[in-house]
Each structure stands twice: as structure tokens, then as C-alpha cells.
Amino acid sequence: MNAAAFDRCGEVCKEYAKTFYIVWCRRTDDLVDGPNASHISALALDRWESRLEDIFAGRPYDMLDAALSHTVSTFPPFRDTIEGMRLDLTKSRYRSFDELYLYCYYVAGTVGLMSVPVMGISPESKATTETVYKGALALGLANQLTNILRDVGEDARRGRIYLPMDELETAGLSEADIFNGRVTDRWRSFMRGQINRARAFFRQAEECATELNQESRWPVWASLLLYRQILDEIEANDYNNFTKKACVPKARKIVALSKAYCRSLMLPSSQTHCSR
Image 1 (cartoon, rainbow, N blue to C red):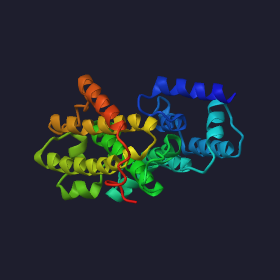
Image 2: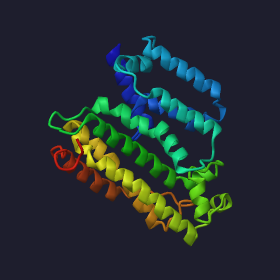
Image 3: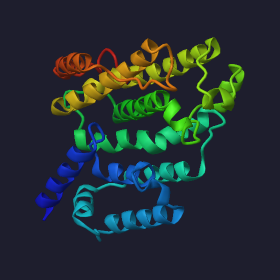
């Protein structure tokens, strides 16, 4: 049963997610971003959370739940992920980066935290467990911030603004500027600051990526390098993320994957780069 359940999880991820390779997170995300998202209510998320409780109690509902029930031996932040999806149902503005940070933690940082026990820490690493988890959290946050910056126009067309409203105001920008898709010098300056923040999280994640087990490093480095290039593409589009979607060309993806593989072979750098 367990083998069949895990095989089915792999099939789901290969069909629906290029980089989102955690089935439960993929299924939860689809509740608010999938084809039936407009019909999802808070009650549906309550039921989904109750189903998670059953998984922890060893009462899986289906084959995919059985795989998760078998995997869960501690109490990772699955509930926090559901809380992030609730925000998508009730919240379309974020007053400050602190609020946006919390949202990013809920929907993406938790994925990084849940991945560490699966990927494992290299026996050669001298970094503390806390340091590795902070790096994993930073990568989840960086990836989500990158998604937000890439999808500003798409989100605006859905009536959502995933940007710190106080920082927009300080930059002399309004909601109307977002909804009208105005690429101005003020917008470019604002976007430079947002991109720099995302890159800072990527740098934090990069410091300790080599601390993972060697067989786990390649996909982590690939995610880091590929997502970071999306920020480059936003800049290349002259910060027009209203009508142009920043896409990394295939040739650059191949180069990034090669770089990721080379970096995955590096020994843990905790002695010189990561705090203990």
C-alpha cells in the first residue's frame, strides 16, 4: 500500500508541478489557485484541516493521504500552510512587509521547512540544524517574493496586490498605478528595492545550500538559481511586470541546471561560510 501511495504521489507531481514537488502542498495550493478556486470557501479549508488532523491520527482518507501519514513522524508546519490559503480567501492587500512576510512564510516558507527532514543534512556539515532550517526558510521566502514580483499584473487583474502598501505609498505609488499598469520611474525605483530584498533572501539561502545531503543539493541549487534568474528577466523587461511575464529562456535554464549540478558537488561550506 505504501509503495503504491508514494508512486501515485509522484504521478500527481509530475503532471501538475514542475518545481512544486510536495504533493500535500500542491493539493492545498490548488484549493485557492486551481481551476475550482472560485468555489472554495473557508469551510472547505476547515474540512481540509480536519482531514490533516486525521492524517496525524493515522486515519488517511485516500492513497495520497496514506503516503503523508506514513511520512509524518514529527509535527511540521502543515497547519501554517492552510492558514496561508485562508489569507488568499480573505485578504487582498498587505499593509507592510511584516504582513507580507507572514503570508510568504505561510505559503512558501513552510514548504522549505517541511523539506529539510526529507532532504537531510550532510554528515560532513558542521552547521547547526537551526542554520540549515533558516536557509531553507529563506529559499521559500525568496521564491515566493519572486513569484509575487513576476505576477504583479496577473494578480492585479484578480483584484489582488501582494506588495507592501506602505512602501508603495512612500514611493509615491497608488493602487490605481498598479491596476492601470503604469511603468514609471517611480515604479522602476520601487521594483529595484523589492528585487534587492528578494535577492538578499536568496543569498541567505545560498550560504547553507551545501549543508544538505549531497543527493538533495542539485534540486535545491536548481530552484535557487532558476528562480533568481526570474528577477533578472523582470529587469530585462524594464520592470514591466504588468503586461510582460518574466520567463527564463530555455538556454539559460540549461546553463543554470549545469551550474546547479556543479555546486551540488561542493563539500559543505559551514566551516567558512555558515554560522555554527
